[in-house]
Image (cartoon, rainbow, N blue to C red; front, side, top):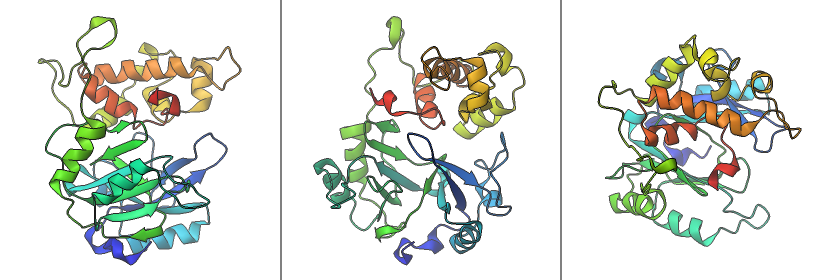
Length: 291
């Protein structure tokens, strides 16, 4: 990684990731830099990054020792103030030419960290700051996160500085242009909600995932043999048993999507916006959801 990223500004927020090929979109498995093994299923590493992540130099040393399929990741914790803009399918890997949309977004974040993603067809922009209004995490090829997410760093064509404070008007422009909450209604005429039921105790995203992963009755209630963890991590063996496909696919993906949404509806107190946000963070995510 280019040293202009201000590694000192991201203490104990780095981890290791492992590339898993053979899928339509390369999976990136988060690895504990202390042990060199994947984080425990259902563990709370995202809720306490100070205990489970490390500095950049240590993570880079571990990744090099583990092999070429490993890399360094950066975890975004809500209280840290940093953000990630992830632009997909916006760069020609042969010529390096950017789409008009990507060029406009990059131009609005001068000085922020910039790199080419692992696919060679996307761009990461990392900086500091928060928009002034609620937002979606993704629409089309534009993703925006302020917490509960890690990014696989590449250092390819890297420039800029992670600690750069983005212009507030640029963040608000990004939300207004691409990520504003514009759901007028939900299926079957139901109202789209942005808060949990009044009787429900609000939970953070990290608390929702921790509690859902540790629940023992979820598999019996939703989908028979597939637990929340199976759905969250897209455990193909478990999902193939629970949701057999009639089309020759590994499993019935639509049924798995619906089951995860049902789980999340319960754990969020039927907060539609939270369900949408968390669904996009799961391993079930696929390009079809953009449609």
